[in-house]
Image (cartoon, rainbow, N blue to C red):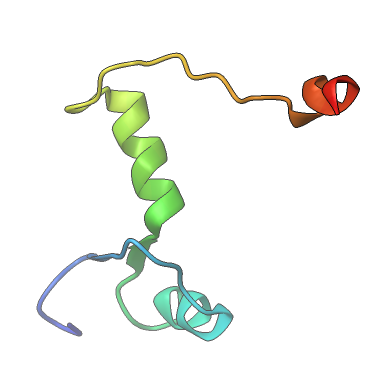
Length: 68
């Protein structure tokens, strides 16, 4: 990328290692923005891009303890 771009971006649905995060901001080369799965979801939520808000509920299994 050196000499060809001002900045790079790499997307993954997974995560990046500590070494890859260090390499992305190494001195002397254009920075690379790393977008992992969590950051990607946060960005989509912030922009509400192709997302519909939905309320969900989780069952509390301790509620049923008294019925045994």
